[in-house]
Length: 176
Image (cartoon, rainbow, N blue to C red):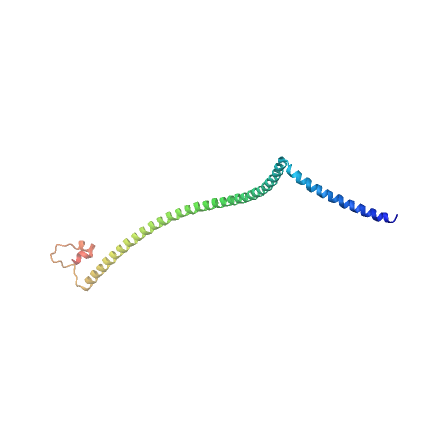
């Protein structure tokens, strides 16, 4: 009998443990159902506020990351604008220098054109005078040839009124 007792004790202890567990589960189930009806509305409000707080914190961190990224972009854009402003300033200075050079070149070109047109006019006048001189020379040479051949004789004047000194100055008057 003594040997049988531990088996029984073991079975009784296992059955008591199982029965305790089953009673605990049933008690918890009934307690939760009953307790769910008695829920405090402030607990729901606290849970909602906790959830809203977590959402707001997540959104705040996202907004901080966005602000940091935008600040970095803004800094990059400012640097780019400053570089471009410097480049624009250099280009404007270059353009003003080029404009001055262009104005100087235009003025020099106008002066050179005026001088060239004056020289061309002088050249034309010189050519006209040269032609006149050549014509006079050819007429004088023709008169000389005529005198040399004896076709034209100044010593014999038809009226006898003309003076030899007057005719010597201009060969054309001697021919006419």
